[in-house]
Length: 289
Image 1 (cartoon, one colour):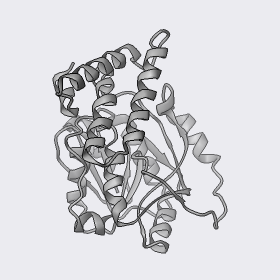
Image 2 (spheres, rainbow, N blue to C red):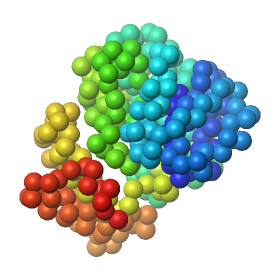
Image 3 (tube, helix red, strand yellow):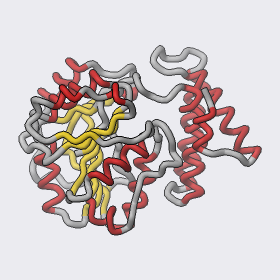
Image 4 (cartoon, one colour):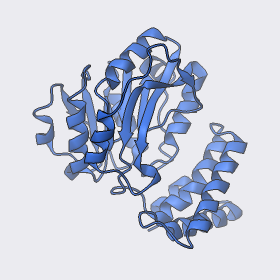
């Protein structure tokens, strides 16, 4: 089990509480905080499984790679975001899924509610949603998907190790599309699926996320970079860019309180300008405020 975290110490504490309620506990948890203040070791004292703290600089790809390196002795690694709360049966269903389907190399679960699409969900609301979850029928088939959703993404580590796969550290800070890139690399070695019996709630907490300007730049730079790299289909990349820019243009007239639409739109503009100048690069966000 791996969690990369940044700037959400109190939220992480709630995520760990829910992990402790799993009917099938993780064999070990690897937490990679971006800074010392991002993880309070006292949070782990009462947990019924070992917790290992892994060091790495800030950046989702870098932190997840550090967890991959630390988890070399395991068969399957489950990545949760630090604000993903799982139903108690999640890890038990994950174990069944990977044991029964040897061709599956990556999987995600059913997100019952996703606060990323709005202002974010509070803990009480998330727990109410978890409590109301009814597991679907046992014979519900797995669904083949293009990429696993990074907020709850399980990886079979044998092909990862055998092929030296890593999250792309050219996608800095929040990463944005690092899950897509990793899954498309891994897809060469097996199936990527979604399992509705694995379920949880993504709070979509806004604290600790990339600034609007940086995120807007990434909305242009990251799909373009992954298309050039070969892990993102050109048509998908173009549609993603057009959809995101269009949303920023329309909603910047009356932006949501929880989204910096004008910042994102300015970041989009900077991205297009760099594309024209031939200097578009995901790492450029490190130079932006």
